Image (cartoon, rainbow, N blue to C red; front, side, top):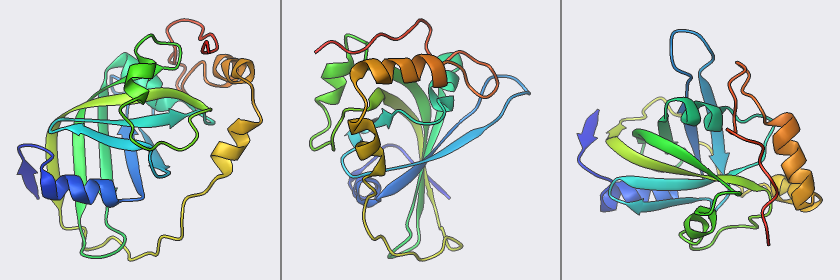
Length: 191
């Protein structure tokens, strides 16, 4: 394993070329569940600097990442090479979820050069990276990338902003451990 000072050119190129990555968070203390989520879809991840990255967080069946970030901010993102030379890159840091209802949401969204349809995004996860490392990845299997799925985008296209606000309030109110996800009820985004 090698620790790097920053997300430099070679590491940045590798990270940006990966069609998927994994996000890990956990609640504070000895109890509770560690969460690992796969993320993907072209245009939903961006490197914002040597020590900063962000990704679009769409509505989903759970909201563990937001709950954990609200509680303690700890987050790790992992990128694996499933094609080409083996490599694993981990970005450890502190993250914050910026919900669609936040006044700074639109400014963060504008930093994504070519996002897919953003209807259905519930927040931007903004990560300050304090540790960058890579390792061999020799045991990661070789797999072929066929393309992005469009099911999430199509599913959200059928929902209004009010439907999405209800989804957050009803289905994304608490983590599986009962931690609150949004500090206050989240209203639909104006616009």
